Structures are given as C-alpha cells and as structure tokens.
Length: 357
Length: 248
Image 1: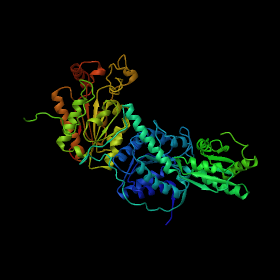
Image 2: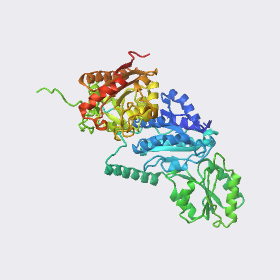
Image 3: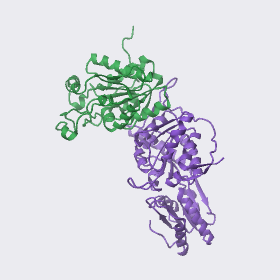
Image 4: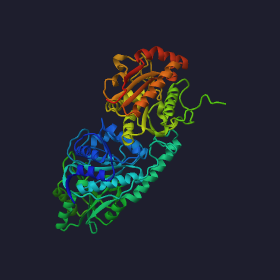
C-alpha cells in the first residue's frame, strides 16, 4: 500500500520500521517535519523523542545512546550539521553506529531555507576534525528517502560507522506516494556497548589515545574499514549510459531534473545518459570511470558551485572533458537549462567546450 | 589477618596519574566506595569528561563512555534514556562543566534528567597547565590571568550549585569539600545521597566537590588544602542546597 507523504516524514516512519526508538534533535528548516513526526510517533512505539537544547547536545545524546547499544537518529540542516561536527568526529572515532539526516539548505552562514546541495564537501570529506569518513547516502525521491533510511541503519550497524542521509529541501518538503518495505528482523548484537558490566569485563567507549603509536594503529584500523566499505558499498543508478556520448552526472533532486534533460536530448538525437551516485561516500569512481571511458564529454549538474564536480574529475582522470552547470543559493536548475548545456556540448564537437567551474 | 583497608572494587588497579596532593584521588575513592556500598558496580555506566579527569575511564571499574569537552551531561542523557534502569553518572571538572558545558549541565538539570553529576571544582584548568576558569576566584593568579583575576575584565566566578538551585528539575544539589577528614566524611554522605536520589528516580543530582590543585596553584599539598579552606570556602559555601525526599 502506498501512502502520500512528505520526504521528511517518510524518513521518520522508515526509521521506526528499522527499529530506531531514539531520536535527539533540534528544530531547523527545512527538516523540522522529521522531529515533529517522531515527536508524535516514537511514544506510540515506546520510543524516546527528546528535543535537545542545541544540535551540539543532540549529537552527544546520540553518542551516549549509540554507545549504550541503541539504534538512534538525529537530523538537521547545514547550520545545525556544522554544530554537530564535533560530535560526529567523536562518534566516528569511537566507531558508534548512528544515522544523521541532513536536509540541505542554501549557505554559507545562515544562508537561506531553500533547497541546496552545497554541503557535499562537508558530508563527503568528513566535516569535523581528524581522518574519518561517513557513509553518505543521497536519495532522489520520497520512496528512496524511506528505503535508504532502512539501509542507513543496516550499514551503520554492519560497519560501526555513522551514516549520513543527505537530502535537500525539495526532497524533505515534497509529497510523493511511498510504500514501506518490511525489513528483515533481527537485532544486531553489540557486545561492545556500555550497558553495565554484569557478567563480563567492563566496556569503555573512548576516543583518547595519548600514545601516538596507539593512535596511529587506531587510524590504520579505521582506514582498513573505509577501504572495505569502498570495495563493497558503492551504489549508483545509470540511465541510458550504454551508448552515451554525453554523460550527465548528478545526485539527489538534481539528478531527477537532469534525467528530464537527458530524455529531451535523446528526443533530439543526442546520445545523452545519466549517472546518479547514490553513495556519495564511497563515491562510485570505478563505475563512473567505466561509463566515462566510452563517452566524449561529461556534464556535472549540482545545486552548488561545483563540489561533486571534483570527484567526477577524479573519476574521469582527464580521459574526457568535464563541464559543470550549477545553481546556488536555493535556486533550482531547470531541466531546459540543463538540456541547453547538453546541446552546447553536442554542438561544439564535445571535447572543445569546457566551461570553467 | 583481617583486611582493614583495600581498594574498592569499583576502582581498577591502574595507578592514578594525578599530581601529588591533588584531591581527585580522594574523590575517585569516595565515589567508588559509594558504588560498592550501594552494590551497583555492574549496573553503572560512567561518563568521563575532558580535563585532568578524562582518564577517569582508566580508574572506575565500571562501563565508561568518554565524552567531548563539556558534553558529558548530554552523553549521560543519551545513555540513561536508553537504559533507564542503570545508574549513570558523570565526573566533570569546572572548565568542562561550568564553561564549555554550561548549556548541557543547565538543560540536563532543567529536564530533571535522572543522572548523578560529580562536579570537581579546583578553580582552574588543571590539565592544560592552570588557566583561568569560570570558577577562578577574584584576584586569583593563573597563567591567563597573570595579574590576578580582574573581575572588571574577566567577570565573576560562577556558583554553579546556587545557579542550578533556581531550577525545578534538580532533586539533589550539594557542595562538599575534601580539605580535611571531617569534610571527606561529609562529602561521602552527599555523594551517596546523589546516587540514591537517582536510584529512587527522584531526578537530577549534582555534588560539587571543592578540590585542591597544588601543582597549578604553586603550593605544597598541605598549603593547597589550607588555601582552599581560606579562599574557596568563603566564596563557595558547603552544604545541601536542594534535597528532595520524594517525587513531586
């Protein structure tokens, strides 16, 4: 059965279905419907909703709850996610599983409340201090907001790593039909959780290593885990890429807009295709490189000034020219404008037109 | 031969790193004795903070989470909400609790979070080498108030217990000192009460313990205890400020 729901609310329901019973958050537009939904729903399933005094406190409550073995979530938008970075670094260091939802709005600073993708760097490069990575999932529909929320909890537990669900104001606010797929039952066993040391040695959740050799060993262990995640968890959607000469690369809502432009180009006889990374970290470099090898040009479309663009260039390794079209500040790229960019590439014998980012 | 004195079970065998004459060791022991006497060692989760007492996770023989600077009450909140039948306590210094963690402690107290907070006040940042803390006394010399705390520039010390006593959430608020044996005995009673309050589900409990810092105060251990008595006690009076006997 399908229900018409806002993206933010779909995340909330999917989290409950994934066994999440604890939410600590703070209001900020455009994600507030998520805490509002959970404030109503969590008590119905004997869960805990707590509105924290700040995003800083909320993420530290997540640290405590995750360390105690619970499936736990928090959510925010750019300015609040910035505040959470301290806690996220500690959570990554302590290898605690949790899900963080970031419904992006325009920045920098207080910016605006309209949709944006300008926190790609913050999401995929760590965000806080130290060498760490978050698993970053980028949905492109309300259905995917729900599906990836379930996946986020699975991956968080599997790798003992924080997972960031990276949406934007459009996805959070818009309503679409969504169905909730039941998840395989079964609690993850967490023998490391601090639950009181009855019948076992005491557990310590810690991120301090004053001995540099010990801290380097911790870093090596983390990096090994990240390589494993890179090898196993890359996800991307491809559309009309089999014979594509112009490959559009976009994530989230921008990918849906780009898809319409690809259809438009195909109708004009231009062999365009789309690659939509679903995991922004790990970024699907290898898969994208395979598609780009067969292409003549790539066009990156984002709602920022060119952030994923850097990853696409890394994937292209200079084998195809990579151009960029983006809107910022809460403005959306129109599919006609994207189509115009594809035409420009097609009309200039592909490779010769590279618009500086 | 009868054992007259031994390490409490709630302390590990790890030797303390604290400076000679520092009273953290005394306070650690009191907390451990209370945990043993209440029989809650295997049912307790501690939260260590940032500062000299960060290494508390090496010393308390219970499950421990180490928190970011000032965030221990938020971390403890997360733990307690997941495990409401466990005993959760934080152990924080004055820089951690009264400066960078002011928001977290005030709101944990306001929510009546059922946790116990041990707040060790030695009137300076010990771990980083003796800088001005929110609790540094007027005129007190620190490395960042080299001419003494000038209240016209650095403001006035905060009396945390009195401030928290204006809230409805706390069930138990007290200030103790450990500068002589009689005070140590009183401090232990207060610490015990702060744990009992949580076990009875009455609400938030905090005990501030005035503590000496001979190294950063530049005093010998005995002189430091005298300095504490002479200078800190008048500004930070000991006693119980709030003592709920039953749930309201």
